[in-house]
Image 1 (tube, rainbow, N blue to C red):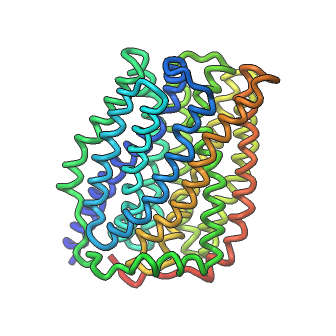
Image 2 (cartoon, helix red, strand yellow; image 1 turned 45 degrees about the vertical axis):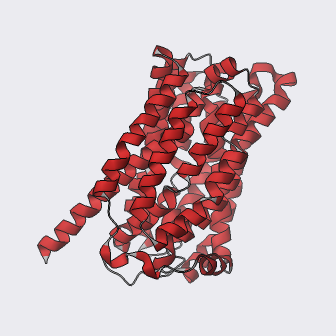
Length: 420
């Protein structure tokens, strides 16, 4: 019996490691655009608004809306196969981005990235929940969510070095090929657990109505999306703030951001999962209280870091919010899993991500770009910095909404009867 448990844990660890690697590429491919902004804007002659569109509403619409049917297919067939196909698809289109010669070509290729990435995250959440017992689940979700800061850090660092040495086109091509190469490895080693093969998955029309009747779902979704609006926007535009307001060249921007995002982000994501597992076992409300407290600290420290007079002050100030702004990933994704029975998890996650990404990814990058263009007449090169600072106010809104979740989360928690 002990040997069997050890085998299950080793299998779960391997699956989690490979899903994490795929998620790193997911975020890397999605956000590498930010560090390459200066070269792309200059070569393709884009406005800040146009560049914001490339990571804004059209990308978010496909990424978010298609996530629901992809997750439904994953619940009904094989979560692992859907994830593998999605990885190959978005990586192929990432490589194609390097061939774009106009705004519209890059726009279409980025839409392809969005379509592929729609099939990756929600089925991964559900697969992790299948492999890990409830008492270890938030930590497992947090480890998976390390893909966000690691992907962002590697995207900025590797993207900067490749773009500096060769071109921004080579950066896209290299990242795309890496994802395509990982796909067959994922297909071979990642399997759906036999006992949760999903022929009994709930019809898609049953899952969302169940969630929609729960106010806590809407509060969780809009709290997270308010945070993501700022998070996605800053991920795209902070490299350009460092270029325009601090005068950092490409390699230095990559090094500065990679260090801040990697150290801060990994600490925050894993710390959030670890704390949620410990405190959440005593009170389910902590799955909401932890992110709320973190966001209240994030807003002023992000603004102070962006407005710092020099890089020596900006680095420690930006380290704090880069740790706290994504602390929510482990606790909140775990909480969403526990709003529904096990067979509805991938579809429930996709429903949550639909709202989170439509608002966050759809509005954030474009909002900052539009504000920057609007402020250029008054503030010139500093317009982008002021636009980014204005966006940090959404963290306060996110915190207020999340505090409203605390009592409702306790009342709506669905315990998992399956011990894995």
